[in-house]
Length: 151
Image (cartoon, rainbow, N blue to C red):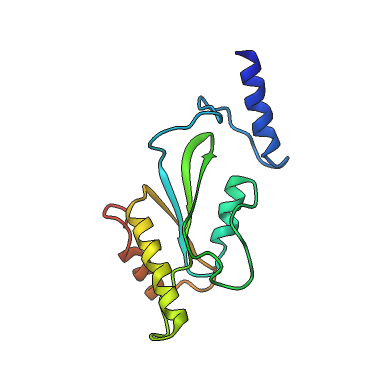
């Protein structure tokens, strides 16, 4: 029993930056928990969703680039946030304005469809917005897709 506790602490420390607080948790990082809360990170393209996803995981799992549109499919990973097991999901950027008819617009529409499907099946949404760009149109558009009770 003592050996398992030491392994858990070592695992936690190896993936936790020195400046980040570790949390004592009744949950084991070695266990595979069923029915983890599904937390979706959503927002417009290139606002930092994948960077935030990677920060929560303390490793570079999602590809990050200065060019918008790198994340197309949702990326799911089991994680621990504040000591609690969750399923964290990074999504592609949600473009409100698209050039209809182009190949890029077709891809953007598929990304939006996948993001909407992911949002419908989540327990919590982390909406990432770029400071200085929040408009009434964006706020209303984003909230119109939120599950009932979230608005």
